[in-house]
View 1 (tube, rainbow, N blue to C red):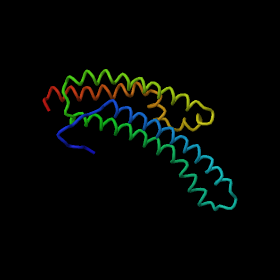
View 2: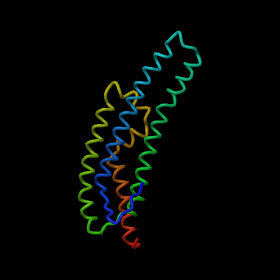
View 3: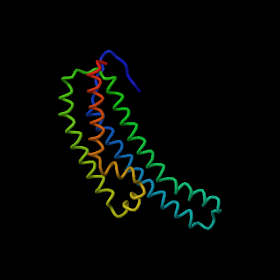
View 4: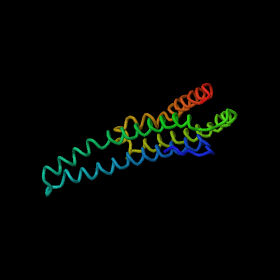
Length: 168
């Protein structure tokens, strides 16, 4: 959603921190939900009183659960990146604030490092590790969060520089 007003201010640092934390929580919750669904599916498959249609449906849902949530995580990351790049063109900022934003982005990288380490610690737990292997894109992005964030920041800076050069 784009807000149009006479007093537009962009806060890239807060937005970046929010996106990182949302993706971190979404990734953890997805893997935890997959672990829970695994135990539910195991109980359904072992239940003698359920018919084969129910068991087949549950197994199909279980087989599609991890790839679907992993794709949703990847899609959210890509869409947040596109949103950040496009929103740069709608921000009414002065080039002087660019230097301040670059300095404040160091805080984003520090928090990104903490989140990447926390992700690795949580995903290396014996209970979650087998399930985390099924979430390839989530594990890759969160395991390489600093590199991913660096790429997004470079794209944003290119868009911001292009905006200043074009006079938009």
